[in-house]
Image (cartoon, rainbow, N blue to C red):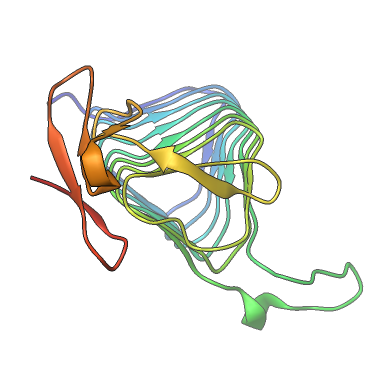
Length: 192
């Protein structure tokens, strides 16, 4: 794989770890201690805070800020201008850096444009957060959530297509790929 490519206008503080074939575009700022995997695309005007962990194959579109306490697993898509927070009750005049809450976005998830992820939640594998949604609680694997506050509106396949329910609403099928999924009595969706 070719080495990482960093645009001359980007500011990358040392030490950082950046994987091969990762592109960091115009006016980005990567703080010291950040780890960015291989084959990532970091769009224009992205801020990556100290000690943030970003997995392989992630795509961060323009104007995304990833604050300390956020972890993105492999293959996460962050839509344009989506927002992470790291303090529940910020005040400009009170120092709360010891109160950062961790947020984990699991493998293959999509965070739509202009959505907000309130700190302390986990976004499940292959979940899809709709554009403009405000996520205030954990999102299950394969769930599609929309709205303010975000509520589950269905299930999506690993490829991001809405699933169709079969009889009894325990079996689901992706109409695009034909893959099958099963909903357990505990409410967990898994591929068959």
